[in-house]
Amino acid sequence: MAVLHQLPFEKPLYEMEERLLKLESQPDPTPAEREIMRRMRVALTQMTRERYANLDPWQTVQVARHPDRPQTPDYLELVFDEFVELHGDKAFGDDRALITGFARLAGRKVMFVGHQKGRNLKERNECCYGCAHPEGYRKAMQKMEMASRYGLPIICLIDTPGAYPGIGAEERGQAYNIAVNLRDMSTLEVPIICVVIGEGGSGGALGIGMGDHVAVLEFAYYSVISPEGCAGILWKSSKHADKAAKALRFTSKDLTQLGVIDEVIPEPLGGAHRDHFKMATTLKARLVESLQDLDSLSIPDLLERRYQRYRRIGVFHEDGSAAQA
Image (cartoon, rainbow, N blue to C red; front, side):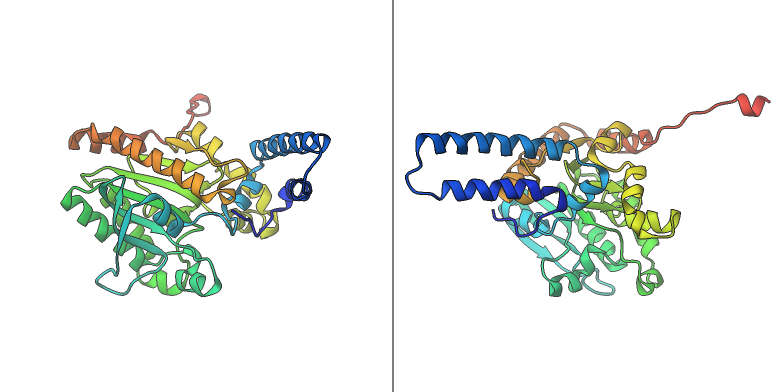
């Protein structure tokens, strides 16, 4: 698909791609020109692979936020065979930052929950750029409890910079509702698969992130805070976001080493924004396989495995020398 936005580090790639397209558009190329085009294609592929294999944490954030990156509605269309949306939290309203509903994955009924950022300004204002309110988390939990009653697996796609930080959200119990979700998701008697498809920011991500299998797309990130928020606290300026990104260790490689996630799902060459269909195909295959693996577990084993998964997260070192002194 055509990419409308170019990141700074992608500029050399697009320049070479443009030169290659000009050569390929010429009628009746000579054997020498065909050989030049072949070498350029090889060089372009190699350069793209090297660039994306060596992204620094801040560049990873830029890719995760790429305007052309596939969002939840894209995956609903490309991954799932059917979707019936369920609205509202039965108390306050329908938060558009979280989409919930019945879906069908490879012929199997599931409950779907996912963040929605919006593509244009109108959608982004409606969705608050993917920052959910308390009513959004209540809606998500109600639908997941419904799934548990009917024995439906739950699929959660995470893509948010964080929960909405406004006064109204705090007054309506933002932190409380996220905590309730964490508590109640831990006891649901159905398989839960969570995938960070872009940004996985703070409690906003955790509110639908308690799962049996937690995966992250290759160039997504999963963090306790956004780089800008961390820089604002530590260095009093968001200008140091790149420094904060490095310190937070939130890339897929870091998360694997720290034992926070179970799987890194590879993206197409050049990132998911370069090929929505290929990314969706890969994601669908991994979701189906993960569900099949979890199906083999009994309910008690599933719950115990989920509990132990989160007990294992976190590495620390105790040194008794200071106390002895």
